[in-house]
Length: 402
Image (cartoon, rainbow, N blue to C red; front, side):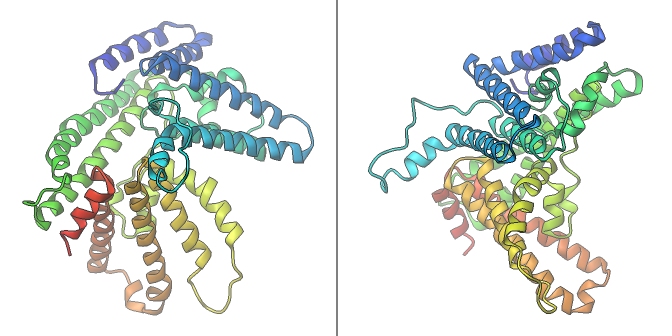
């Protein structure tokens, strides 16, 4: 059920009306039932999966929050998080891995029937992992099943995020209320803005650009370059549009959904870019992948060197993970490698050159414009990896630029 469909429009009107008419104590349950109904549209089996995953996560969290041996709680947390990762990997990557390694292995991965990844599995598994990690660390101490189910089944964020944080989301559950006055106007404006971005900009640009990413001998490097720039417009307004609508729909119920984009194409370097792009994802990966990895790889500081291999290795690995998170296929791995390599080059440049050349550190409109342009260009040029239907098609496109 996509936000830009008439079915969803009718669904949203009904849910908003029921929410407004319901007594305060029932509003959380209205949202839980709405989430189940929203998810059921993608298939009844998917509802059973997400409910089972949610209840299992909640049950494990209850054990983690109780008293018990530390070793046992660590083992349980690790096992539960590993189970969620396996769940995501199986539904999203099993067919790809089975096909990719079919020639290298004597058998195939056990794939039972035609798998279709359940709606938003990449998002809800990350949210559940976050919840378990925070409970295990003691940063979430009190929680109820009602609160957790509202968090897990909040339909405005189910399609494309943003990825929510339990600690900031749940305090709002007990005060759920329909938006009124200026809040209602702001919520409707955000919904209409997101709808405009998606329908009036992203979709038409995609109709123009996407056919070009199916390589043709008549296409030149200039043709592909135009398509890449158009692709950067499409992906920003598509994801940004969905985020705007999610934030607007959340506001209708008195829930503040985190912002997901902060003008990333104005960033002057790649670290700043990724801190502004899909912020709920990049902050999740930072907190639960990059920071733990960097701590384990931390090397002793020596001399005056500003280049830290642990940071470069960790950020490269994180970008590969972000690439694979977006989809199953070697082209997504290549996209992650491209972005990881670009971030690594930036760190080497900043630590090895900029810190030694004073005029590169001095404020300058020309340098700002140049660095902003190069940041945008590195991201945009790499979009060909995931815009093309396959890795072979992407390589065909990039060979045109040689």
